[in-house]
Length: 136
Image (cartoon, rainbow, N blue to C red):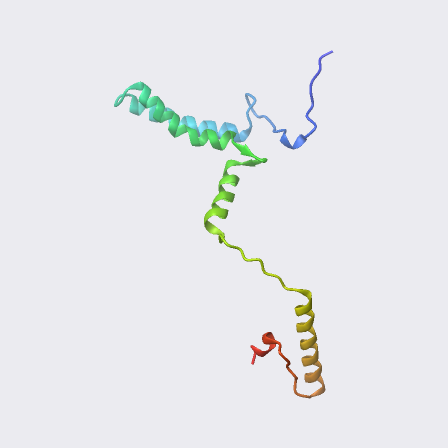
């Protein structure tokens, strides 16, 4: 009887469309062929065939990378997006900021006293809370 291995991790299984390739691979390989072959035939008359073939391969390489490269289950465009965000868009230094429980409860207590004073008609007593003092 024939034995067919079944992978235990089904997240890595991709549906194949034609010739054992996924839709993504077919589109990227088609785009690579649409760019590379005309480039080769145009350059072959101007320069030697080996140089034209080398330029064709260089022009097709990004499409092959987008079709085949995958890191940690993410395609190349997601990896590049993450690299660009971490290197250029987001700030390099992210200071660690905390809001400790004591200062939060102290602010809440002062706000509660202020609301109670307003409700009873007395003037609010503001003691040393810089956040409340800034609003004046």
